Image 1: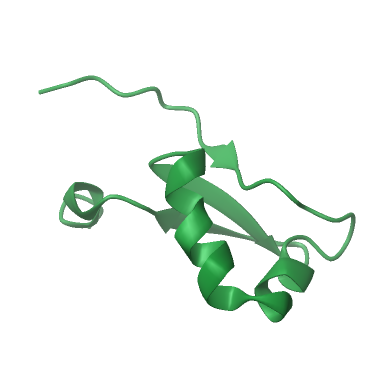
Image 2: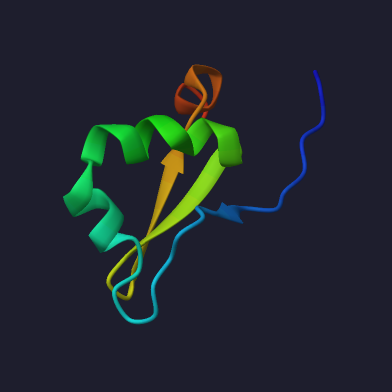
Length: 64
């Protein structure tokens, strides 16, 4: 089994206080499709609420 860094990366384009909400409003599908370029686990800010996205199918089977 390959080892992966434990660092959770933050999606680019975060705004102060608003987080990634403006990017999601502008083009939701394009924003979500860009997340795998950032990393396997990506933190997205919805306002001040952090949300973690799993961008690899193999992680979703092991997340529970």
